[in-house]
Structures are given as C-alpha cells and as structure tokens.
Length: 129
Image 1 (spheres, rainbow, N blue to C red):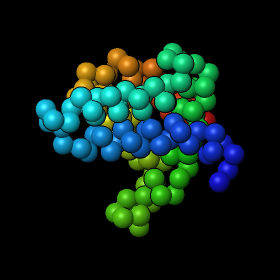
Image 2: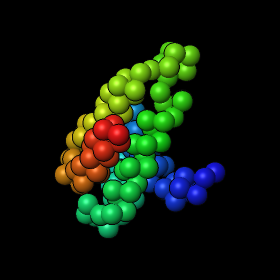
Image 3: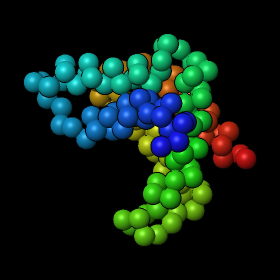
C-alpha cells in the first residue's frame, strides 16, 4: 500500500461507511445509532471541523484516486471503460450522495458541508489539468 493511501485510510474508510449508511434502511429503532455513527464518520473526514489544509489534501487525494482508478472508471461490471467526463460525472454524483443526500436524512447536511466544499474544489482543480 502506498504511503499516501495509508495516510488517508481513515478518511477513505469513513467515506465508504457513509455510503453503507446510505444503503441502510432507517427506522425509529436504529435512527439514533445511525445518526451518531454518521456524525463520527463526518468528523473523521473533517478533522478539526473546518475547511482545513488536511481536509483539502484528503479531498485532492480522493478525487485524484477516483479519477485515475481503473475500477472506478468502468461501467457494466468493470468491462467498459468510461470517458474522463463520465468518471467526473459519476464522482460528482457520489459526492452529492455522500455529502448532501445521506446526511440530509439525519439532519447533518451542515456538518458535511465543508467536506462537500473541499471535494468539489478538488474536482474542479483535478479536472482542469
């Protein structure tokens, strides 16, 4: 595993866990537990709670990894490669899901706003190059 991968493993895992929470059926029995869990994942990604250099660096790492991943950039069970623009669209949809739609189900969209801002800024930066 590359050094950068290790450095951001905690944040990457937190993003993936947010996606898992998004796939979980929410009801009155588990909503409080899932809200607490989601908030802990958001905090793991944000770090100190603001738009920090660490958050910005992680966002650039995550976006760069996604844009250059063969697995992320394929469709139909990994058999058809997507265009760079297609990968960008998929990434923007995932960012919307992770930072807006899923947190909104728990009233946490404000807490995830700095993550969204950092990821969108990183997408803009990495796709201009």
